[in-house]
Amino acid sequence: MAAYAATANSLFFFSSSFFLSSPRQLPRKSVPLKTSRKYLSITSELATLPVLSFTGEKIGETYLDLKSAPPETARAVIHRAILTDQQNKRRGTASTLTRSEVKGGGRKPYPQKKTGRARRGSMRTPLRTGGGVIFGPKPKDWSIKINKKEKRLAISTALSSALESTIVVEDFGENFEKPKTKEFIAAMKRWGLDPMEKSMFFMMEVPQNVMLSSRNIGTLSMLTPRTLNLFDILNSDKLVLTPAAVDYLNGRYGVDYEDSEEDEEEEEDGEGTEADENTDAAQ
Image (cartoon, rainbow, N blue to C red; front, side):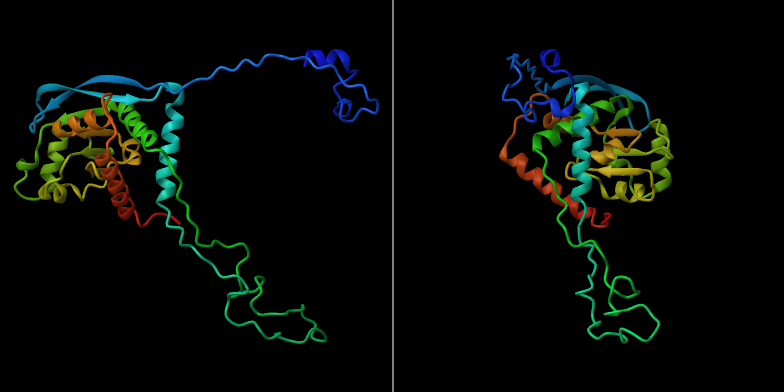
C-alpha cells in the first residue's frame, strides 16, 4: 500500500489504474506472500477421578484420558457440533398455503366500480382473512453434515471440560430391588449431588428399576452409548459415570482410538435412535 501511495496523488477510488485516462499504469511491486498455516492439533488430558461406593464412601480412583481440541479451536468445534445436532432434529414439515393453493377465490367478489369499496379480484388474497400466506414456510430439509471425527472430537472435548464436576460410582443397579424415587434421591445426596441441579448419568445399560426410580426427577438424564449426545453433556452441572462407562469412553474417545467399520455402523445407529427420541423438536 505504501508503494501505491507514493505514486498516486490520493487514495481516492477513481485514482485506480482502471479509471485513469492515460495509458500509464501504476508501478507494480511484487511482495512475497507470507502465509502461516495453523493445523489443528489434538491434545489429551489425563484426569484422575474418585470412585464412590453406593453408600458414598471413596473406594478407589480411576483415570480418564480423552482427546481434546486446543483451547483456541475448542469453542468453534463444539459450536459446530451442537449446531449440527440441533438443526438435524428439525423435521422441516411446516407448510402454508399460497393464494394459488387456497380453495376458492375464483370469482370476483363484487364489481370493480360503483360500490365505494376497495377493488378486489379474489377472496383468497393474502390481504384478507382466510387467504393465502405470503412467503410462508414450506417443507424443507434442514439437515447438515459434520465429519464423524469432528463430532467425536467435540464430544470428547466437552467431556474433558467437565472433568472437574465428574464422579465415578460403582454399579448400583442391583441395589434397587424395586422402583423408588425417594431412595434414588437419597443415593444422589450421598454422592454429593444436589437433586435441584442438572445431572447426567452415563451407564452402559440402565436397569429397569433404576430407570423407573429416576424418571420422575426432571433435572436428571440417563444416557447410554446409543443416546450419548453433546447437548446433555453441556447442559449438565454434574456428570456421573460407572467404571464400565469410563472404560468405554477411554476406548471410544481416548488417544489410542482407531476407526473401524463396526464403530461407524454403531454411530449411525445411535444417531438414528437419537433422532427418533427427539421427534417433538421445533419446526
